Image (cartoon, rainbow, N blue to C red; front, side):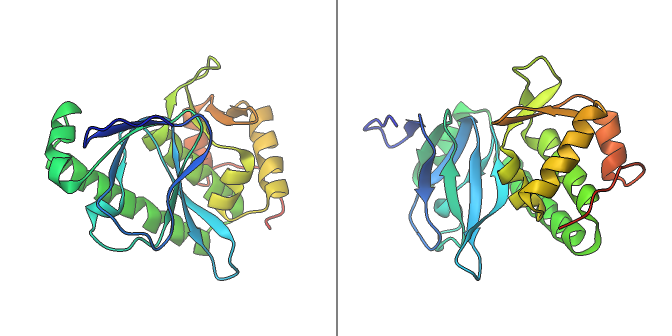
Length: 214
């Protein structure tokens, strides 16, 4: 990880690194240039659960609220972020051609997505939850695929299973089926989008090959 003495610092991560932990406070505001940040939360059993994935263009950090955060943020390897405080936020936003309205819209969209996922977690079977989660991630976090497909996201199957609320084995079985159907592809670290229309159909519960939910 590299730092500078400037009040606006660029951070580059060669390995997975915790940025702040649940309950931390401070002035830090982060902007993701490249890579991804896992948003996590300690559950009632003391385990660290994954509740979101932020990608390039995302703003986050305790400095946005001025309160102790109830989440943990972990930068994935290969990520590049800028960190500043509320006093220098406008400078960073000008550098990135961002506006305050755009920042507010991003935060509102993020809240809406979490509400949708919570509703589906309560009401929908795992294949529909998983398809909606992937569609959402590709739509808002997807990057040009380095494997020759439409888009990809840097997320392991275990991390995806944690976000979707399913077991690693069940999610792996479903992804294998969708890979066979030509909807997605995957490697150890990435999930790639092949057919956006088909994924949308799965998310809308029009067609899917169900496996036993966990």
